[in-house]
Image 1 (cartoon, helix red, strand yellow):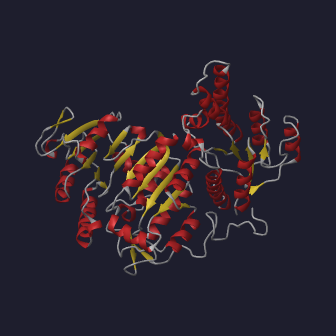
Image 2 (image 1 turned 30 degrees about the horizontal axis):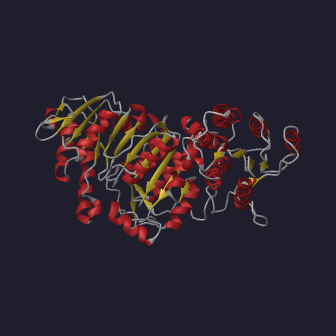
Image 3 (image 1 turned 135 degrees about the vertical axis):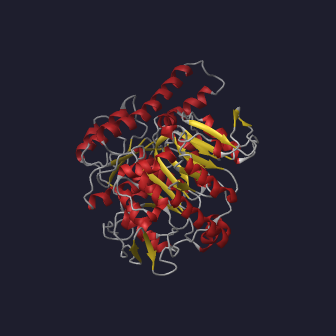
Length: 556
């Protein structure tokens, strides 16, 4: 904490734990199923009506009802690719390829006008030829003009969810927005949940479902992704691959003509496969509805938000991208704080915040202990923690200092950060980490220096003298030590219920190194710098503090 600057209290608007000066704006009235605006635009840049969207058209409070509603989208018994193509450059080919390639066990049907073969499977020439009640999801890769009839036939065949990949709707202006309104009305009339249009696809790793026109398919995990940008979904899935921190569900919601982002977030809140939601938004049509749904989720589990359109330049880009009307950024920021939403300002920060929530327990308090094997890393981490208005670079307790004295030579720092000063034996790091993690005054640990030994080991192994002169033995020792540290951090975290964050540039520079590789193997995030580890820990603490102030039950 910065000397002379008081810690933020829970009532201040500067952090996720506080209630801002502005409450949920009283700018809507409830009429039947929807919130209707008194003015054409509300504080959030919303339109003057809900267009019958699922986000505002139904208030769903029952978890079972929500799970049943989204089951055909995320856990379908069968899927139809409408517009499947044999041309590898077409979206209809990519969607068909991805569904078949990742192990989906449900029934798969292809449809195209020619009834031609796609990837060795005979396609239907019309949805009318689809057997009834054999599929409950249709993935549509056909032009906008064909979609209404596709939906009507799909409904007759027992399909209850549709994903529309086609562009050419609200992002093109008023005519396109009118098409979206027609699409939403038709979806409500037919009782079909529609995602899109202008989206990239849907992922559900528990069902091995990869129905998307982008890559990659992420490892299975516990982050639920919902984004108005398909490119961001792709980027986030790339991060999941790189870090080993996996995804439960992912939806590229596009223009959200019928089902808004808030509806997906509400579902994530009751989805047992999802521990944290991560969403990218460009504009919010119904601000009150969005934050009510979001707050409902944050009372159950964390929600991380990255918002585009925070500046005038970003707002112009958002309008041409999805046709979104961006909100007043100050109001949006305040609403996030009130609702317990973790707001982030870059893609990297957003993923690392979500991955931290997915893989670490929440800290019980602000006290952070830094364990390092080199002094400089500890110094800059101490600077960052001292600048934090949420976390505390705690003084080292006397009993913990005495316990370290028994295991370390006099040259160690005898303070926090605990700089071991190159005095480690085979077991020193493990013993010191366990002592710190088990101390009641310590709420979280940042561990710096993992990977040093493997870094040297890799250099020696690739050098001209390996495996002679004892190098084979010492290289093996280096590798085993760093693999041990990765396991140690994860095991201590589980045993003591405190977040232990490992930071090393080798995550980026040498991912094959035993330390980051060991974290990736275990699906736990390792941070490329201590600065980013502190930022992630701030997010964990802020959300924990928000929950504590509201006397919400501890997360399991």
